[in-house]
Image (cartoon, rainbow over all chains, first blue to last red; front, top):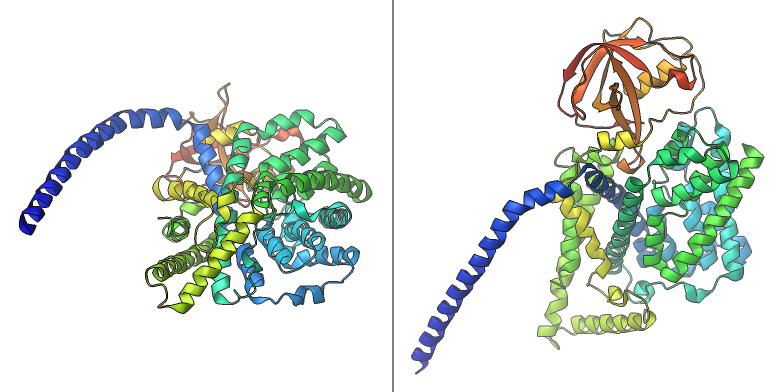
Length: 334
Length: 268
């Protein structure tokens, strides 16, 4: 009885496998034929120079962002896993109005571009740093660290005032934004993923867990931002902007918008600014002040880390403050 | 698959980064040369994380099968679920509610990472070429007219397009006069038949590429996008530092086709 049943089962299995193999094989063969005939035609039709350039710029932004994002998530995971909660509240002044400029100036110590600062700011908030101070750090870190300032002085040889103007305008924007948040900001706009809230998860396990989660999460948003930036990069030729170099006000606003859509890394934007030779120094300053604080890639990263309702409000206000501050500093120094 | 999602994603990303930076020089199509060590370190770190994630994924499965025997594991999963639950409440109306699922499941948005990773592993996108160069007006670095240091010895002397251009337009000492120079780049053409040897300049990554180009006279036009070296002498035109001096001109003695150099861009 048992033997017959296993035999029948076996036969059934073999027949089923054969049917699957024949049907599946035929389907696969059909697909393979169609793809191999149509595929190259279609691929060649679709793979035009603009599409190829889009892929190159897209992967370039993603590749360039990975080391900095990883640096940022390593620092942020280390803060989450190894730094006790009380350290930051002891280091920073209790008074928020005072803590904001201190945190802004502390941006000097994180030698990365803007991708790195978002996860770090997130973990600072989880570790009990006042959001206003963490946000001032978020804005100032990619703009005023030594690597960026050196790059700026290389891009503008013989114009040390440009470096000073960038430092002053960026720091001013960061501090003003921190104060604005302390005065008008609402906690409920920020939705931090509560991964590290668990006080029991401390040490190496918490470190790798946090690192892995933060990197994957932020990495996804980096890719999203890279796609948006590549699209603008290909769709809007920079030479179109030369039409607007005549008006001082228009040129400042235009370069400030260009900084948002181009998403040039803060370590490279000085070179791009230097090459926009038709524009006034103030407009180029606005490009360098806005770029590290508001761009498509950053909006995507912030939306992922702090939530969409925060990212949109914060980025739009930051853009306005950054433009105003660069106009004022440009008028004063340049 | 869900369990090993993070491990797979980290592995793919790490492999893509290592493929372009450690096993070859493809990374030069996308980013500047100085980034290589950071890319290699990142690639290895991502691989390590992938291993850690895979181990965590395995460990997560075990307690379900042998609940009770491993008290410690059981407790851990319990805590994970609790945490997951808490997060769920926090992200009630967020669009990516499921992104935040605790411990070892990857956020859904992270799957976007497969796009650049697979592109780099399977069909690495080409370096930017004449298409990008032609849509941007060639930019010249803002700088004043001045005296440049002497050119290095050599006949012909190898120069980057950027170096040649700034000397041609801004050097009051006219260091290019009477020297034979050799330039490397790809071919771009204007509608009126003039052609240029062109190179893109990259400071950080391909997104910030700008163009520099030198007009070539005295030789037939090669097909667009051909990589060439041109040997010739500077043909002065226009007054120093003005738009009339731009773009600079080279009277070519010889044009030789070459393969695309390892680094398709000039460092700014």
